[in-house]
Image 1 (cartoon, rainbow over the protein chains, first blue to last red):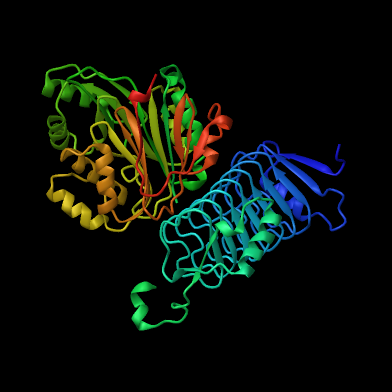
Image 2 (image 1 turned 30 degrees about the horizontal axis):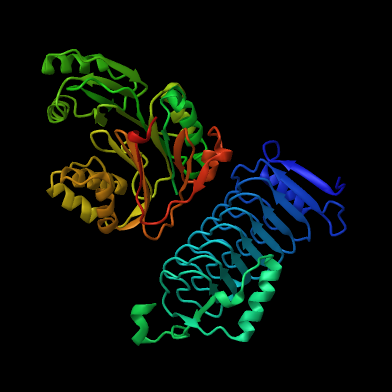
Length: 231
Length: 302
């Protein structure tokens, strides 16, 4: 029996109260492990955490689960709604089911792992987060992605990496279509090494050599009238 | 914003529970649409040659008896009806065009909510829970229902501007999103003989489907044409006499989640609306793909 484990039942406690309790924890807290029951698709569960605690959510979560996460580990034993781990700064978010749109949007750091599929706009405007999707991603994934790595073990939908900046995209399966200014790039030794490390962190066993790399052609960084139709 | 829900029961033995299950789904979408709510429900089928007619009058004390007497004089037949708040459901052995003409001439302030063999549409301004209570939806039975909770963006908060929109006999539509070319499409459709009651964008989508179906399209084909001709953001749920369909635009900004078990197929704007359904823990859950038509029909029923 883990004495540090605290259980919160969301059929009896509001999300607001749960989040406030988690925000009020001190750095010396003994309660480093939380289990959330009956999430029933509620929004904003475990948002804004800023301590290295572990929060397990037993079921499907709604929108913006684990948003703005810092240091904490959030594990969702189900699906998540729009914007899981939105703007995460650090820590680890693990979705054991599927994620809806805009997973990991604008994330600055940390690791987001999705065991199932992520739908449209996964990693939109990501700014340094690492995202590993074991299934496939929907259309417009990594749109305007600025930094970080998006790894897709399955397929990618339409307009992958549209208007991408310096983020790297790795896809193992088929890419339906590349977005504006996104091109396939050579897999060099440094990229194989990067994937090797990332797979270790994400606890997956795949060969980096099976992935292809995509990134910015760097043609749309500054406005140029000849490119007007492509923006 | 708006919330939409749809529930299609695959097992007839579940039909007495439709109102209860559906009400919980609609109520949970209050936060997405507190301005007005409406629903369409498929109940018992009226005999061939008759139509089920849902009418609305702004005055809760309007004399429906007087209207029934008018119908009886005009159509030389009994016009049984049940009153439900501001709405009344009539069964009438008459043709749609004749009913429309009679109402337009004799009772222009009475609004047709729906017309068909099974359909009943009811909608009002107010919170979803007050609308559900007003019409006593929990007591209703039937095979399937769709509903809408509205946060108005494109036109006024009125009963007429509330969803669902009645499109053609036994066909209705709820919409989350906004259409950008609805004025042009409305003009085109008016030229084709489609009538509109409001300036609402979603009514144009409903009118468009009615027009395509009149041209001989199947529902699936009509929705494929809609992908080409309707510009804007949308998740549509469309009810038909024996089933329902879901369509999202190619960009798919507006949310939708679906669940299926051996007992039912359900769709909602958010998973929260599905949590009260029996056996949801074991349901197959997925997010409908953009620009893809999903449909179910009574043939799938056991």
